[in-house]
Length: 249
Ligand code: BV8
Ligand code: ZN
Image 1 (tube, rainbow, N blue to C red):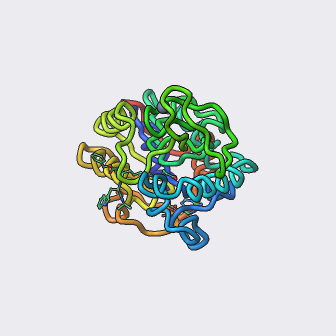
Image 2: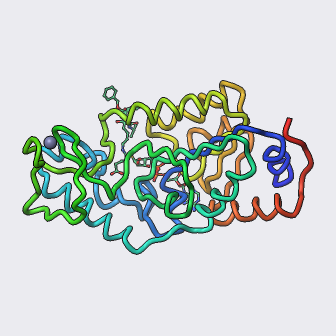
């Protein structure tokens, strides 16, 4: 398996990586749907929505402040760091994340397509003007200086469109990909979950790294049932030690 993957890394030009909450799990960030997951305690489909925010902005801000606090102390793990180095092995490497924790950038990844926004950014609920203030008091939610709208986290909620430019680029790169890694995602949130399917249908080799099965597992050409923080550094080690042949075509 490792040798087959090294050959693919050596022979493919264009790679896309899609990550989900699982890649941050080893940094101590709870996943959404795992046993200890965020959603265990909250029904995030109910909280991560505009309806919830309009109905009860206080509880939504309490949830995000709780997550921000949680993320305040976490740092990138060997999985995030391995992706920074993996990028150097491809002519074109695109990192697409569903995560809002900013850990890929913190690890040193430069071009990161953040499909669902970033929990550390805020914006106006009405005019989307960015709002720098980072600590928001749920009892005194600030108002936009431009239009008076309430300030909300700059993340994509359920039922909301993803940032157009970001998702379009993600689909275009997925259509062109020769190698597509789906790492640490349950592959059920759309349109993100359509990216690996699109890549596969356009001829890419699909690799899934996830200790659990997902709806994508049946489609994957290579399935690595391991934690990303353990497997990715091993893959890099194997590439560095020259395992595998193959030339960039
Ligand atoms: C939209 C930001 C439309 C907020 C998030 C029915 C069918 C299909 C689609 C839908 C449907 N009903 C509704 C929809 C649409 C909906 C959707 O897909 N719902 C799902 C639940 C069915 N999608 C939307 O609403 C999207 N918008 O469709 O708009 C539209 C069209 C026109 C006009 C207007 C609107 C918006 C979706 C974005 C929602 N925002 N987050 C916040 O974070 O607070 S989603 C949330 O889920 C996170 O972003 C998260 O990243 C994402 C996906 O979860 P995962 O990252 O996969 O995390 P999860 O816990 O699920 O899985 C972790 C995995 O890691 C597990 O498999 C585990 O085994 C693995 N793992 C654990 N440890 C490790 C590991 N893997 C490797 N190593 C480890 N160590
Ligand atoms: Zn505004």
